Length: 238
Ligand code: ADP
Ligand code: MG
Image (cartoon, rainbow, N blue to C red):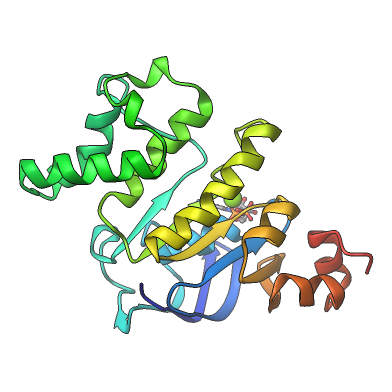
């Protein structure tokens, strides 16, 4: 577990401000959900926390360490994307093991850890398959397993369920809640699905046009939206 502290973090692409200076403190083990309409800057914020995008200004501190200039692999976090990007020629087990191989973890420990996360994500029976022989939901599970196998203290998820059908999304919602408990990791989860936000979050962060509009427990934000933009983003009566 690690806290995530963002201060004065902003991003411009040329003349366009995509994220205004933003402060946000996320506690150890907290499940925070970022919501807001398409284009409001959610992915950009997440990618700057991950180190995949260079901030125009501001700092990112994870577990008390300033990681603003650290490489993505040196931040103690992992990220799950909307597109699964599995290696098609590798089996499920090999896909999950890949980050550990790169990190030169011993063979025996790799086998143990792969078995452990496979069990956690209901993949134990599928370890010898290749990605093309899996359903969309199973593929997304593999990409989550691959992200958590290094035991990240912080897990970033960018609309991880948006390519799945409604039934599967509902099932996976429960799995994320369970995964959060089992991992004890700090989770930052981007979605535009109001139900996901309301059911998963300890706190939601509502964004609009490159700004954080409101932060709070989902029920409070739902009952007392600070602006029309917030009411629209979370579907509250306003
Ligand atoms: P969201 O994830 O909330 O949909 P994004 O963070 O992806 O929003 O994008 C926010 C804004 O930044 C959008 O208007 C998008 O077009 C713009 N943007 C994102 N990446 C780039 C880039 N590399 N160059 C220029 N504009 C970008
Ligand atoms: Mg996005």
